[in-house]
Length: 114
Length: 114
Image (cartoon, rainbow over all chains, first blue to last red; front, side):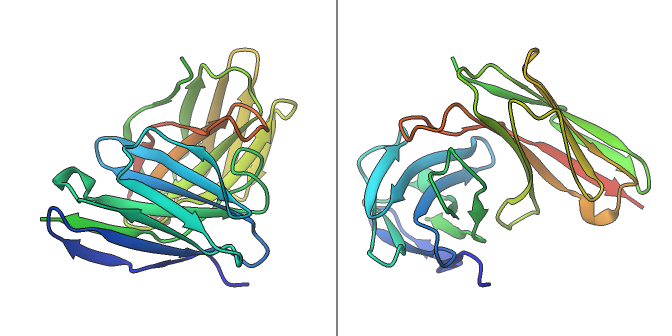
């Protein structure tokens, strides 16, 4: 059974640019949640999508957005990149909502903003 | 305020020794508590998930305990191996409802030395 796939694994952008990250969940999983991980802040929740609807959102500015497609694949977008956006972005899939059961994480997309 | 605190922040032990990691939470209501292992540069992997009615759960050499009365959990690693070197993250779920968000601890970084 294939795991959670995130692309790209690594990317470098400059300030002001935008970036789109992709996440393919485990087959049959309907929830995809996104997290930002930095050395100083640990794992922070960005948002969760379930059946194409955003179910919850963390405390991040509107520059961070996401969506989920009918096949449960999800994308997140960060516009007008800032240096502080450099981080490991993780997505996780689950059968039900993230608060209810086990999360399966991808390997992450490491974003460096110069 | 809902918080999850982990201790110690970091720990160094010799291969073959046992160790115990702590997680204290002030989350209410409470639904479940999870422990994840995260190797450097990789996504977290689930070790255990416990509801309020479970006191102990084991996964190979990892044993998690939960005391819902004192709001404490521990993760005990038996006969440590070099591959146990990783960060261990405690995560608490407040409720089954999507309006709630997972609360993440900042993790304990474990280094196992030969």
